[in-house]
Every structure is written in structure tokens, then in C-alpha cells.
Amino acid sequence: MSLPKSNETTIRLSFGDIGWEIRFEKGLEPLASRFLPLFSGFLRDCRRVDAVLHVACDFRTKVKRPPAVPVSMKPDDDGFAAISPALERHFGIDPFGTSVVAFKNGCLAYRGMSDEGHFLFYNTRRFNNFSGTFYKLFYLFACLVVAEKGGLVVHGTGFDLDGVGALFVGASGAGKTTVASTAPLDRVLSDDGPVVRRDKRGNFLIYASPFRQIHAFSDAESDDTKKKSLLRNIYFLNKSDRFDVLPRARVQALAEMVLQHIHAFPLMSPHSKKAVFLFVHELFSSVGIFDLHFRRDDPVWEVILGRG
Image (cartoon, rainbow, N blue to C red):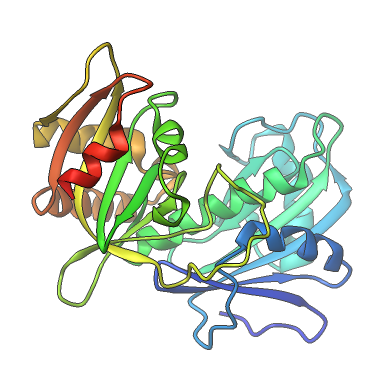
């Protein structure tokens, strides 16, 4: 992992018991300041840095058809020829030996197991959403790093129930944000991407993360760096015309979790995919797995609190 240059602006934060550092090249100080609210509650001058993201900007690089969803770029893609010289120029990396994911105004280059990512903003005609681009690609970077460190960033909503954790997952529109919006704010660990890892004793813990939809980019003063809970139950959300909580078949639930609710899973290396599958298998052998059917006005939060 390279040392920071003296002319770089850095942001340090901590979540999931991992220390993160984002290094902006000279001239990007306004962008660095713009992204500070994104990490509200997680900013911390941690001594240990476990993963680094380098950020550069090259508006001489023009991508005519930037993807509207994150896409792994291949050497024969139209935009790859435009992006690769800029990646070499700013970061000194060989794009042909590195995974590159493009999205709107930027791309993320990441070589597996390096704990070091490279983020490049470039010029487009169709999009102008720097905050959204950065949020999404930093999210992907975090997912890849956490998976390589023996954990998961889950596309779901995590809660702290007085030291006991609950995780809600479901397809888009299943009600994750609805459930989160009815809960006391201090109990929500993340409504978009909580981190799940094991401690030294083998317990599964769920951690707060800066990935959220409710109050995203808000500059509220809080300290969320150490928020975590012992994960006890996982609920698969289903909007329905009835309200009930039923045990879920673990094999079916495991397949759905891996294929639909582990963010960035398709972008992971074969080694990381295998590690993720084994992690989820062990997780599902240790916690309660439920199907939760509910109507919009059902008292979901009160029921979950009652179950602990």
C-alpha cells in the first residue's frame, strides 16, 4: 500500500472495524469537502489504515456513452480506450491487468487482494452527478474489500435492538426503507448496506456503515464508528395482504441471499465468491432465518422489538 503524497487531501473514516483512507490528488479539495457529509458519523483519524482509495480527475478524458449502472469494462469496450491512458497517467497502473468498473461520471480500478483502489472522474455529456457516482463506486470498493477480509456488505437494512442485531433483506420495493423509516433513528445501523463480520470468538456481528438512503449526505453530528450488534435474526421481507413471521428454509434462503442481496457479488473474484458463499452458509447455521409478510401499515417494528 503506497504512502500518501504530501500534496494530497485525505479523508479517514472507520466502519466494520476497518480503517479507510480516501486520498484526493491536488486540486480536488472542493470535491473532498463536498463528500464529507456522505461519511457523517464515521469520520475518524484512525491510526490503522486497512484500505486506501486514490481519487483523481481528468476532464480531458471523454466517455461518450457512460453506463447508467455499474459495468465491468473490457478492453474491447468503447470507453476502455478512452479511460486506460488516464488511469496509467494518474495512477501508474496497467488497466489491462486490473478490474475496471465504470458508472456515470467515473470509474473504479481495483486489483483483488491489494486493499487499494483507484477512482477516476472523467468527462461525459449525458451525466453530471459527481456525488452519486462517487457514492456508488466507493460502495462497490468497500464491498470488495470487506469480502476479502472475511465479511459482507449486505444490500439490506440493519438494526440494533438493545445490543442484539436484526437484518432485513428483500428485492427492490420489498419494504426495506419503509421499515427503516418507522424505526427510531438511533436503532438503524444502515438502511442500504450494513456490514456483517465475525469477531475473534466466531460470533457474527452487524455493523453500522455510511451507506444509507434515509438522511444520506446529511451532516448530523454523531459517532457511528463503533456501532455494532450481535446478529441474531435475518428477515426476508415480502409485501403482502397478511401479516406473519414464519421460519424460512435455509437452503432456499442461502441461495437468494448470495445471488440477490450480496452487493457487488458479480464483480468479485472466484476466490472471494467462494469465501462469501462459505461465510453465508456458516451465518445461516448460526442465526434465525424468517420470512416476514406485512402490509404497509402493519406494526412491523413493534413485532421485531418484541422478538428481540
